[in-house]
Length: 111
Image 1: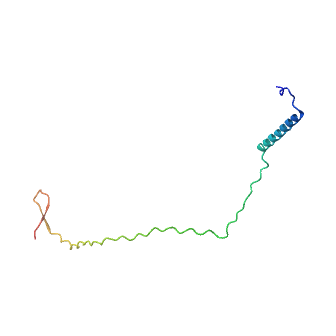
Image 2 (image 1 turned 180 degrees about the vertical axis):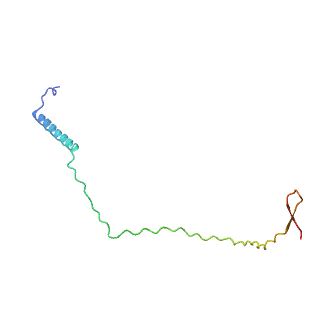
Image 3 (image 1 turned 90 degrees about the vertical axis):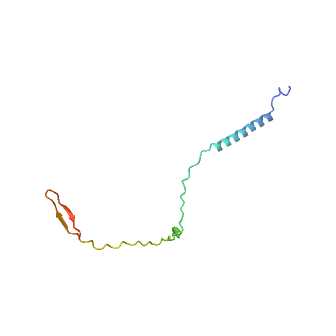
């Protein structure tokens, strides 16, 4: 208990002040680094790219669909055409007979 009543010596007070100043300097440095304002913005750099002297190769030709092999055609079935009919027979002579008061009805006479 005797140590509690003693006053701090001047050497201890000096080290306490120096330590506090170092702490404040470090805190200020960290604060300034974290909250620094960005500098002036640089204008965007325009880049120029030169095209090659040779043109690009032509595109590949389109793929041709595979040629279908001709299907075997069925043998043609010959359809016999009907023979032309000879000239139609001449019309028969018709004789018209009627009784009085009856309508006329054609009669075919046998040859």
